Length: 141
Image (cartoon, rainbow, N blue to C red; front, side, top):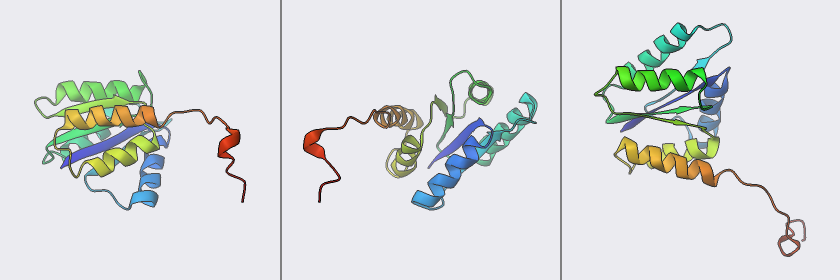
């Protein structure tokens, strides 16, 4: 199974984990790593490294970070480079729809690179603007 780590600023990651548990139950081989205001980069690196080591038996690890170029993203990239040859992919811009799809897809997607590609496609599908249409009035009985 592919392991999943969500990381982000503040309680973003643990909040995503909480929402996923509410919607889909307790996921296997899944953890969150928050980067709290009082943390140093070294604290974040230590927690990411521990999370990766806890998933060493996984066929790969997908790290989902909150924002591009933020500290959790940058440290995830460093962990990918430092912990080679372990198969680690990093995707940024995680949203809850993406996380739900990734969690469900781990049952049939066995390559972490393919799962990362799927995460990006699903994340893009989840971002849209509501457009009201007269023909689709949802409030009519």
